[in-house]
Image 1 (cartoon, one colour):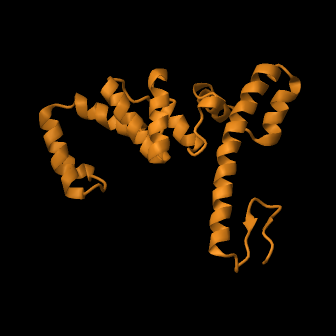
Image 2 (image 1 turned 135 degrees about the vertical axis):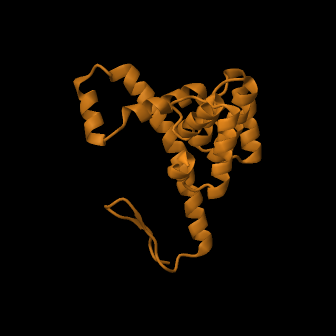
Length: 186
């Protein structure tokens, strides 16, 4: 069998004759590594920030690794929401990140359900949005996936019933395309 090698560039060189079962096994291993690495990065950053943030080399490390402190801090919040004993090894870090947005009393129950039903990040997001809706909490403004939708919802809710009806009629004619603003004035 041909050897599988990593390249100096970011990538993985795979032989053309790699058997499907080996390819599948490799993918599972890579996903497993990624899940573990995300958690390890979060735990590493949490420790480093607590222990060494005053060190002059701390800022240099960020420059040398091109680490994004904002992203790392967000990862730490997930790690704090789910200490190592509460993390589901079969779920991605992203699924945990979504579930971390629910109240602490409901997290483990939702995490167990996600694990049992094998949720993806997208499915977890939908369940968290539904949960927050049922709890009466609003979507966060800083959620990039929902920011635009929240703005549209708020504008819709502020509009008069006549304006909503008119907009709805215009929107129906374009089937999720762009609405010609000239039509709206005509």
